[in-house]
Structures are given as structure tokens and as C-alpha cells.
Length: 454
Image (cartoon, rainbow, N blue to C red):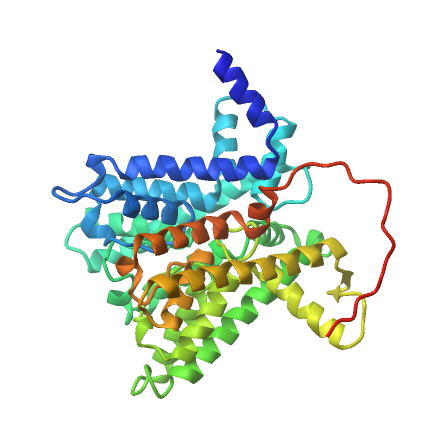
């Protein structure tokens, strides 16, 4: 009893950010235990502790980097457990936790609402529980539709309906949560000539990565009357996120087409080139599924894909990275500063200084974090620099794409990637705020002095 009270007091002293980090850490440990159960493995297969930790964190962070072949390692029970972990990590700990509280009839207090706000990167307390219900319903609905479509379509590929729908079940969850895991053994390479399968995956990936607030606003718009639409206005977040997301997808597609036209795509038809490039551009947002062997691309393409993975998905989504809004704000700030202007205006709105500072801090700290990861891996690994940069960017962006070196990494490198996957999922700001101590700000200011720059 005394230990329990002491533990509760200790947790009450933690900030919402610290609690979120603690919860995700606990989720990773729980996933490690579940995936380590004998019933989760195929007969005669066992995982080392390092590989088990790597797989668990990869699943909780919905990254998809693997050191063991999923289909050959895990049993049917293990794959269901893996799907559950992907669901847990993708939708968010507080989302599912709040849903369980609601089902149990528990009251969602102020502290719980603050945790939800932190987990979902929201700025207001109002409507947190309603937001959670909307997110959960929307994601489950998307996954259910994806499962039905893919499962039915897979009947032509697999000998039994059970196997077809099992593949559709896992593929729908993995794509929607941008998990990147697959149970085919070759990602989507077996379906590289099937545009329908690729298109369904593209839609699921985008719906999971573009951000829950965007989906909610678009849904409200589509289901409103013509009269109501006249008075509806999309938020700045939705506008900036959607435009940035689409620009990154389009630019990524065009760059891959140009760089691989006379290399990997040599001899292919124009529609194959465009569709393959589109899929690879979309999957770098945070999905990690692939229809091609990216190790065969030119180094220039691999570097561009690394940059796209580093940017990652949108805030309040299933993905990681610095997030699309941070990237957009930094680019707009640089352009604005170059023109000699002081204020940033986007879509008729002025960006708050605090948001701009956060975007710059996130970007700089992410570069430093990934740089440290690259340096460590270059010291302990014999692989080429571009392969290491690609792997580090994939881990931080919780993408899961790899050039085939993940399973060959040393334990030190695996733990570096585990750290990057964890930081990429919770967000670099949340990671930094974990070490923040609450201190009362002083009522005094030191004298200001200018510093020569440049």
C-alpha cells in the first residue's frame, strides 16, 4: 500500500510530456514481453534479447525496420500480437487509453485531458474526449474498409479465403498506421505490377500520415450542407499541412522519375515509371512499404529519399520525423528573412513566434540527433555512408525503408536505431521536454547586447 502511494505521488510529480514518454516506454517493454512469448514464434524459432527489443520498439513506434523476417519468425498468434502493437503505437497510447476509460465508465479529468493534448500535439483543452472518439472511429473505419477491399481482392492471389483476408487484415493495419511491416517477406514487391493494390495502399498511407485534425475537418466539410459550407473555414494547420504534404509527394515523385529514368526505370513504360515513383514518394512520408529494391537506386535518389523520410509525416498523425509543418515553417521563414521581412504570413494568417521557434528548434535538434547517429554507425559499421544515412533517416522518420543492412548491424547500432525510432515517434520536442524542470521564471532581465552574426 505504501509503495503504491509513493508510486502515485512520483507519477503525479511528472509533467504530461514525461508521462507520455513513460507510457510509450512501458508500451515498448510490454510489446517486448508479448512478442517474446513462445506462442508468438514459429516452432524452432527464437529471438535474441537485442532483436526482440528492436522489433518491439519498431512496432510501437510504427517504423517497420526489422532484423528478422516477420513471416518466417512469428506464428499466427505472434502476427496478431504484432498487429495489435502497431495499432497501439499508430493510434496513440492516450487515444486507446482514453477509449478504455470511457468504456469502463471512468471520468476523464483535467490531468488526463492534458495527457491527451500532449500525445496528440493539440493546443486546447476543449473537446479532447470528443477528438479521441473521432480519431478512433475514423482510423478503425479506414482500416475496416481497407481490410475488406484488400482481403477480397487478394482472393485471386492466395489459395484460401482465410489466407487472403488474413493478409488483407495485416496489410490494412500496417498501411494505415504507416507501420511498414509485411508478412509477404518482400514488402509489396510481389504486387509491383498490380496498380490496384498499390493505389489502395497509397490511400491508406496518406489517410494515416496526413494528420487526424485534417481528416476531421475534411469529413466535417464533406458531410455538411451547401449552406453550412459557405461559413466553414479550414484551419491554418489543415491548409499548411495539406499543401506541404502534397508538394512533398509531387516533388518527390518528379525527382525520383528524373534521377531513375535512365537507370532503374530504363526500358519501362511511362505509366510504370510514374506509378512506381509515386508510390516510393508516398511511402517515404512514414510508411516504409516498397514496390522496388531501393538499394538498386542511384545514390542521389537514396539521398533525396533520406531527406523525405527525415521530414516525415504530419503532426497528430501516425508518423514520425520533424513533421511537415516544421519543415514548411523553416522554409517559409528562410524565404521571408531573405526578403528582409520580420513577420511570417501564411494563407492570410500570421504565424505565432513560439510556433516558429519550435519549428527551428525541432529541425536543428533533429539534424544534430541524426548526425550523432550517423557518426556512431560509421565508426562501428563497414557499410557505405549513404546506406547509413538512409538507415538513420528511416529510423528517425519512423519509416522503415532499408537498403538491406538492418539485420547485419551490430548490437550497438541496433540500440542507436532503437533510440532514434523512439525519439522519432514521441517527437523531438517531447524528448527534449522530458528533461525539463519546472522553474519559476525570474521577474528580472539581463541587459541586451548585440552579437555579430555571419
